[in-house]
Image 1 (cartoon, chains in turn purple, brown):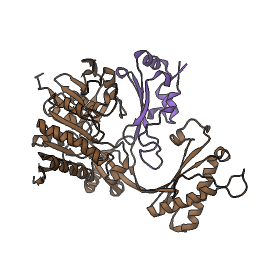
Image 2 (cartoon, each protein chain N blue to C red):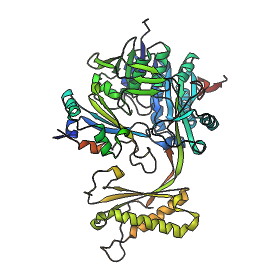
Image 3 (spheres, rainbow over the protein chains, first blue to last red):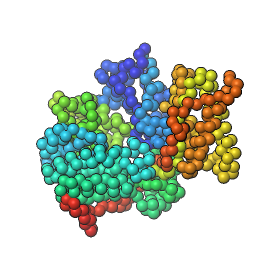
Image 4 (cartoon, rainbow over the protein chains, first blue to last red):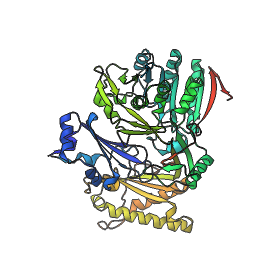
Length: 102
Length: 470
């Protein structure tokens, strides 16, 4: 098992507008990307579980030509609203780093 | 397919005011662009900019970038297209931005025909369209009704390519637009000249971020594109910056919910079939991108309303006894604050009239309830206690109560008067003034692409800045 953080070249989160949050998990080479993609350990359901959402609220994509996996969720709080803690959505990805990839 | 002329585009930087190298800009100008485009805004800096009319980037930084762009555009006699002026693209932001344009024109003795396209929306227009059922919610969206329109500080519409195209056709040499789709700035002219829409919009999507799509980004800098019949080529101006097929493909991920489908006013850019090839070792050739015209033209709205006035108390805790019971301690503190507020204000200030919110850094300040790590591993915690109230005076007064209650809230381990909170500032609270929230995620279905955007014309000749009646 290897942590996703040790396989990706970049894991990031960012606002996709004020109402959505998006995660990009990007890989340096085809081998690592394919390993993660084929592992079944990084899925829509896993992202949903980590962020406390039903799976149908998670948009989930494999972007082969970018060697990247992408997921988008409704923002936990609207950007800049009273209970928002991360205006740019930039530090919400940490739980993804811990995903164990076989 | 009949041959179209090649269209060349220079994007000096991702946001006007974030900077670019002058050397890169000069190199790119030497490649003879047909126009210069620059995005000047975003929702990313947050709702306060839309709410207050204040830009996110410093005036001096915007002026530095804008001066170089205006001088370059006038020297080459090519149009300069700006979008989302002053961060949020409302009337106040556009006015602020035009004032900088005016100042530069005077200082540099520049002459040009300026089109200013306004994007702030008239409240009665929005109410009319709402009543007709022609304002539709995107997902996810807050509730939207006449009251929301009425209490909004500012609502802008995000324009498409059409207002730019009309201004270009009427001879605009410089266009300063309010809120605009970032891509519309770059797609307007190529589409006018016959570049296939899929290629025009895709190139625009890459260009609007300046050189952000390079492999080895160092600072914001210039990007350049050559648009042709069946492909486009992108390359950064600085020869040490490299674009690779992967770096360009990856850019479609950035700040988008969907990496394959990008929705614009007039349709959807579809990147499912896009092909990315190395053109040289630092330029990338893109083809296969498609544009699917929308059945119904839509304009996205962005709005902000005042959420109240805020004061913040910052304090830290080092006592391990308090840290191990921090949830209980902050809950008791919250109740104490409300009890004291009630004692002071009685029925004149109800509990539902103000909000006390505590963030505990060292525990879950960044992720709140979503934080999977439950155990506190830090020997100290930072508390940010925010009070949001109907006036600044009230917020400040309640913050005074927060400080005093927090300072002496007891714990069972100690007997006698404790001092529980280390406050680095004096006064212990910071007044933040009015705070805003985004309150709209909807689209309007207008009769045509122009009705929500009005253009004013100016003849600029050095110090003279005259509105041209239309």
